[in-house]
Image (tube, rainbow, N blue to C red; front, side, top):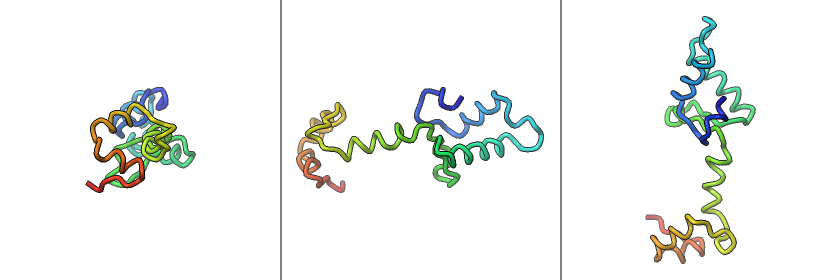
Length: 110
């Protein structure tokens, strides 16, 4: 059901709401929050999604790690002569003075 959500990431609250609609948290043994945490830990361990319990990341559930992390990263680490995407064209127009440096791998630290 999480994959059917149609996005690469959702909030922990959205996962909990979906889990409640699917009947989780009604056994009386575990609270909904605990059951969802166990499910997310299990699915993350299997590599089906990414979830981290750290405070700064715990509200984010990454449903599609490739779409969420690798695709954006590949827009930066690529051969611009071969992979000139619409985002690159927009960046070249907006940051025309920085673009040649980026092409050489020397982007500004600003």
